[in-house]
Image (cartoon, rainbow, N blue to C red; front, side):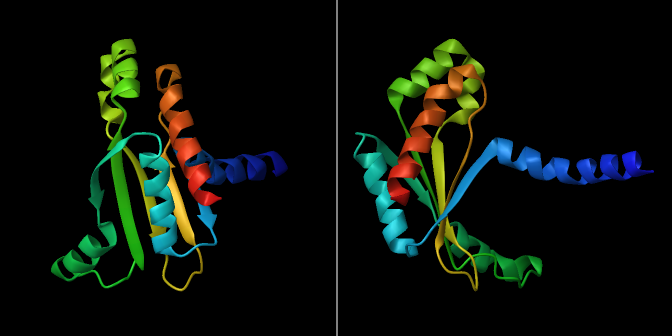
Amino acid sequence: MRLISLFVALLCLSPLLRAEEWASRQKVGYNFEDTRDAVVMAIEGRGLVINYTSHIADMLARTGADIGASKKLFERAEIIEFCSAKLSRQMMEADPHNIVLCPFSISIYTLPGEQGTWIAYRKPQGQTAAPVSALLRDITSEAAR
């Protein structure tokens, strides 16, 4: 019986463990604007160009009523998309299917009733994506300082 209980507990935890494999997120003690600006500076400081900023919290608030949703998910939330021609080319020369990893993106968001700001990104998978993983980790670490 104890073995079955342990097995069930591990099954319940497995989605949580998998979630950590595909995403990285960290909470910082700065406000949204300062955190977003730090991410932008870390990206541009590497000579990279921001392609687009998605204002995801605004979109969800605007469209929520249209689909009958009333829960406020974020106070503020933006996704910054950018690219590195060199890293993108390296990844796609190694495996053209890595196209799905472009553009790179970092999310910055705050949650209702919570202090601090979150910085998150999807972890690129596979050996050929390792340089992109390092870039995203370095940018978010720099912004969190």
